[in-house]
Amino acid sequence: MVKTEFGIKVRMELFKRDMTLKQLSQELGISVPYLSDILRGQRKGKKQRKRIIEILELEEEVDN
Figure (cartoon, rainbow, N blue to C red):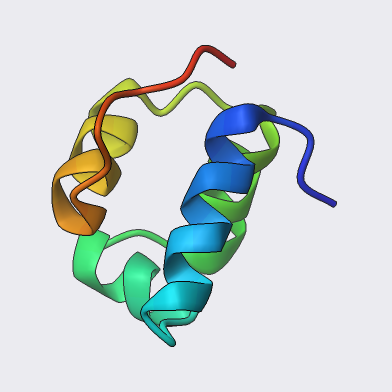
């Protein structure tokens, strides 16, 4: 379950692009469970969050 604003924003963008977590994780070079932990706020993954923002062309990072 998504618990962070960042996670919600990312999942909404993935849906718009018809893109899966697996596809995003492959582009990032990380595992799906690790990506999922970042989106749920269980891991910080600061470098990965920056790359997610760049890949999905999000306006700016949301706290959490």
